[in-house]
Length: 141
Image 1: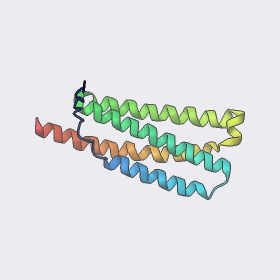
Image 2: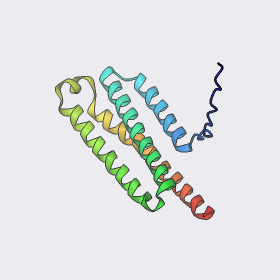
Image 3: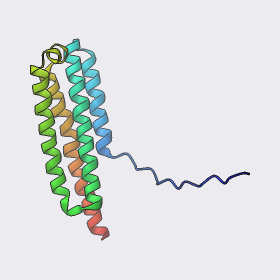
Image 4: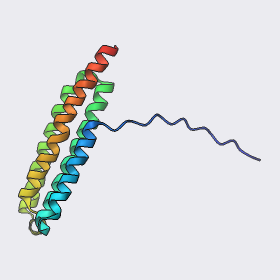
């Protein structure tokens, strides 16, 4: 009557990268800055910081995946990630500036500045960490 419990072999945990930690510190700094501002500015700062960091870390994860599975396409992944950043910044800023409801709730300039700041962190540090990973893969092969 007793059934054996299947053993699940979990993969070892992925260590936290320096890029992720620095981006989280940038988010914490954005929250500390936003606390002192009025409501529309606060919302713009937080929205820009969260979206910039999220898309930046997503691009970094995509770069790491590409380096692991298709190293020849790593530069393409970095370029497409940057273009995705530009598109999100442009669409977000235009939407917050011209949409009547969003214009009252969010400051579009604060959104754009915080998005650019927090997107810059994983883009630069992620590229640096990606170059390090690529050189490790090259020496291991």
